[in-house]
Length: 327
Image (cartoon, one colour):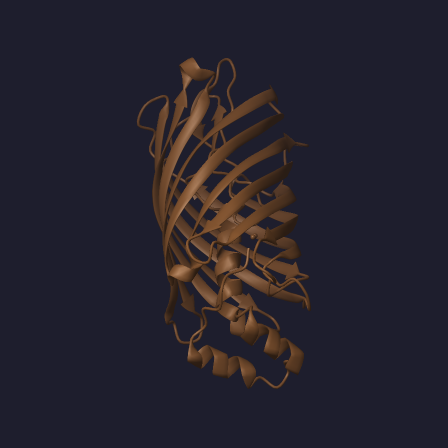
């Protein structure tokens, strides 16, 4: 499975929210004043995007660049086409089909500073990706992903998310195998009930990453990325500049673990808003077969903003099942 946005909800969603009898009056006032369903949906979708590692690349003697057979199971890491690992040569399988289903629990469903509420939600994802290796050092990817977010209590937050993108990753042998990558992504968010388009964004990401192999069983990686965004409504538009680091280990042939940390500055286009966002996560993945694994993850996000009332802390836990087929 990151910062708050200005109110973006349409009149019909606001009417639906304020007339739900199970909502306490204080929560209704809070949601109407600063935190509305669309804001939480946009933030959650961005959290999924931000939690994915742009390039997962390791280097070592006797190894060659290939698509990674394993995608970490922390929120959003099941996405395709952006994670790469140096491993022994094998037959190329550039086409990938992925399906993922997970249940999440959070202690701050609306990403607010005060008056937090708990909730659970389900996320279903399906993706198709084409990941050709152009040269021994240059890789490309083209991915389409559809996701569905459904909440147990606050159903006003339900939304669908569509992502289409492509990118290039280049490993520079003369620069200590540092990986340089660039990517374009289009994101479209729809209200789940009426399928109205409520948010769109175009993002352009550029970054670099270095991996350090400790052995065939584990490695560290660290990187930096800047992302420029064009969004509608413009009140949700922002640029992101962040550094990240992580650690991956194969505990057994079937059990793997990941640790991940990211710190980023969110620079909004309107209102001179600046947020300092930090995310830490851990995950375990158990492989039943080469193409099917179950996972559990826990993440904590904290957001400090120069705008009053737009900071928050949120803890999220997840259990899920992922099927990925390459051919």
